[in-house]
Amino acid sequence: MDQYGIVLAIIGAVLAALLAGMGSAKGVGMGGEAAAGVITEDPAQFGKVLILQLLPGTQGIYGLLIAFITFSQIGVLGGSSDISLIKGAMYLVGCLPMAIVGYYSALKQARSSVSSIAVVAKRPDQFGKAMIFPAMVETYAILALLISILAVTGISGLNV
Image (cartoon, rainbow, N blue to C red):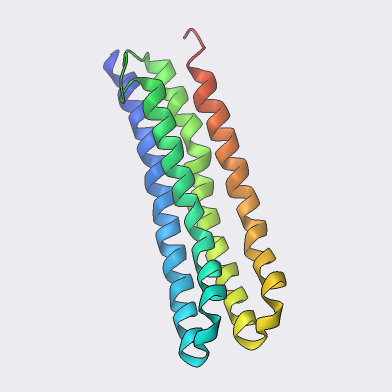
């Protein structure tokens, strides 16, 4: 029964990396399709559309960060991996904000980035304004990252 705690914690870490990474991969792909269309007409816009394309990729990095923090907290990267069932469940729940919000926000940010790429295609001088729209979605990914970091690092000090 004690081994299930570490299994739950690992599932949480893997979900954070997997779901956030899947959302980012899909989001960056959507941005890349739109960006490729723009540079076929105006190659000078490459730098601007590349930035907009890459914005949905941050969630994957955040998910990977949560996975690393969780692995280091539960002893997978060294140390003791003796995790109770309740503690393992807590790690799993602590990873879920980044897993769920990371996936969902990457897809929504991608849609916003694609729209912003369309703005840059028609009005390259509006790049600064167009970049704000997908950046606003990033706010919620950062909030999920913070709550997952607080949850995962706070669990290790609990005696459960």
